Amino acid sequence: MKTPFLTGAAIAALTVGTPAAFAASKAEVLTTYANIAEAKYEDSLITAKTLQAAIEALIATPSAEALQAAKDAWLAARVPYQQSEVFRFGNAIVDDWEGKVNAWPLDEGLIDYVDASYGGATDENAAAALNVVANPAFTLSGENIDASDITPALLEGALHEAEGVESNVATGYHAIEFLLWGQDLNGTEHGAGNRPWTDYAAGDACTNGNCDRRGAYLKAAADLLVSDLEWITAQWGSDGEARDTLLSDENAGITAMLTGMGSLSYGETAGERMRLGLMLNDPEEEHDCFSDNTHNSHYFDGLGVQNVYLGEYVRVNGELVSGPALADLVAAADADLNAELTGKLATTMLKLGRIKTAAEAGFSYDQMLEQGNAAGEALVMGGVEALVDQTRSIERVVSALDLDGVAIEGSDSLDNPTAVFE
Image (cartoon, rainbow, N blue to C red; front, side, top):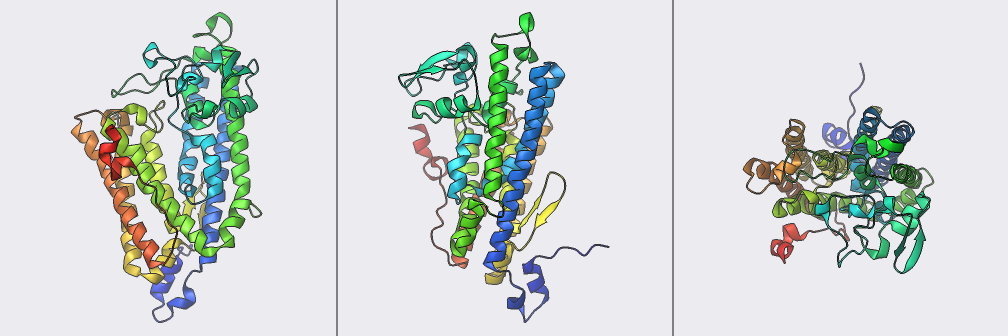
């Protein structure tokens, strides 16, 4: 029989009178955090390579089955990656890199054909309907661009955030998502994008034109995603810059942990990804809007926050990565506060789990955003309120650990709702 794993906090609780001897150190907690980061990014890389192989198979032998296999691989790849988003906000190296792989929302007309209802260029984005797939040559920022060969270098060098516009997203998960699913034209009705597999077919079977270039774009985006994930995984390795920076200053490292937990909980997920879309009743505000996978995005973001606090992560192969945790430090400082935050994290996962369960049963996140849909609003707001509530306890942890410099990201949708409609 295996001995059950006990955290430092649990051991301390069982050894009344000598808690200090068993308390986790900040260095140990930061090492666990770095180990979990490395494992999550490595899992993201492993699943991205599976996605890359599925995309290559689709391009080589297009079929409905090959397209579905690529979609399935994309969905699987999102599971570890979304759990890694908790490393944003507090780690500059992650923030400087993250926009290459997970930027959203995007003006998909930059990449490929769109429905007439999408419109064309706007004052905010002259390249909103550029359609790189259909145009082997074009002009951006007054420069003539040769796009006859669609390569990773073209995507990240000339197209991504072209002309300084953030919605010109040319790389990463969401560019790939659009190329696999196409636009979701269902509004707040049930249903995801419905791109035909023949968009990748050869010769006369090709639909919507430029199937070879569409495949080239998809392959370039997948190759770039893999190389970007290889880079970030290495940064959290034993000699990586992210790990070295984290461990070089213990208080700054713990501050980074709490900044990421609080900002992802509050401004990013509760605010920009959930409350804002509900206020606007706009399915375009979904995080995974083409695939209707947003319920999973929210769930695994929440799980990422929880597993950083508890110091444990279950890898895609079932392996448990665990060690001394932030929860142990908090328990040593204020056992009641640790119990409070641990409970609130569990409540959040329950509320996000309800959204996930409902969506998987056929009540899609699009439908939850529909104006006047009371059941949908209750589900989404249950998640929002739980995330906000856990953030309040995260702020109390900052005080309990006597830390400075924790700046939790906000959102107008939570802090100044009237500004959303100005």
